[in-house]
Image (cartoon, rainbow, N blue to C red):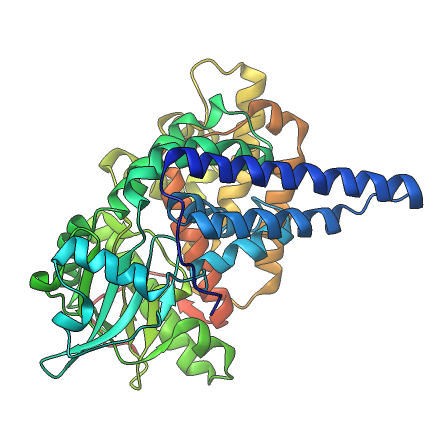
Amino acid sequence: MAKELDRIPISKVRRAGKFVTTGAKVGVNYAKAYGKAALNGRFDKEALDNDNAKDIYNSLSELKGSALKMAQFLSMDQNMLPKAYSDKFAMAQYSAPPLSFPLVKKTFKANLGKEPGEIFESFSKKASNAASMGQVHKAEKDGKQLAVKVQYPGVADSIKSDLKLAKPFALRLMNVKGKEVEPYMKEVEEKLLEEADYSLELKQSMEFAEKCKTINGIFFPEYYPELCAPQILTMSWLQGEPVGAWMKREQKQEDSDRIGQILWNFYMYQMHVLKMMHADPHPGNFIIDEKNDLGVIDFGCIKHIPDDFYGAYFELTGHEVLDNKKRTDELFRELEIIRPDDTEKDAAIISEMFTELIRLLSRPFNEGIFDFSNETFFNEIYTKGDQISKDPEMNRLQARGSRHFVYFNRTFFGLYNILHALKAKVDCSTIDFMKPVS
């Protein structure tokens, strides 16, 4: 795990200063790159991206909170950023620098009035996992093994100001204009504020686990409200291996298929039955036990799906609908992909591009059993994303779609990427959620 942090900048002035310093480092990197290009006649964009990605990630790691969460968020769509950034920022999902134990004790005193050693029979000084908003420690009380999630200092109070400071970096990396992304930034801000509310997470976690307990192959932690506080969340320690580590070892195809099917069933149940979803699907949030069942942790980010968005979105996943241009364009207007002020020419450009993209992304829904190990499918997605990002017409037309796409897209990209890493074959047709998964 990365080196522990003894302090986190909390005040707005200090956090703003960190962004200014980072911007200066990026400026120096550009100057060095152009200087080398003048000497050897070649501009090394890859080296520049690597230097910038390292400096930006290191700064965001020190800041924690929404700044680092944005890095994690951007890394989930491999077309959104140059590879150097997406690879580096992906570390925010599972290996961010943890807090030192004195800071953890300080958080406990502020929230529960006692240090960990006064509450638990044992409490690991070193974090078992550290991410963008908090870190997890292993503890024991009354003979029960527990996972204790501790939020980083200043996370909740700095979300709005951090997003304003991080916005210029994000816009530059994504090559979009600020005005166009305002609705999406607002959506991200609202969800981050929810993630920083551990009282809300406790409530959502218990409700979600209760609603999903009948899905075969899924299990959840037990939560202990009496050991929770605004910055502390205590739950049972789930026995098993993190999905990321499990995938790195050679697995039988039937075991990978089983995990993939459970994961698909879990998400389809959320979307189609609950009209809400666990919108943070990365390997660090799932474990696999000895029975090859899937444990789900961290319910800080739950997205509720409005009925009108749900209906239009999933109607578009049917290829027969995409063959009907009139109906497709009607749905594009409902989803704000085509806007009222678009010219006829612009509407046609948008319609053609998004029809192709959605036809590609919805392929699993239309092919029954789908092989997510298919490299061609994912290369097509990356190529199409790259084509859109470099298309001058699409750049002119800028960001498109309802704000609800932010977490919907994040969820599907995360789900698809895990299934691809699993190399799983999944039955994506109509699902009996309560049927045992073979």
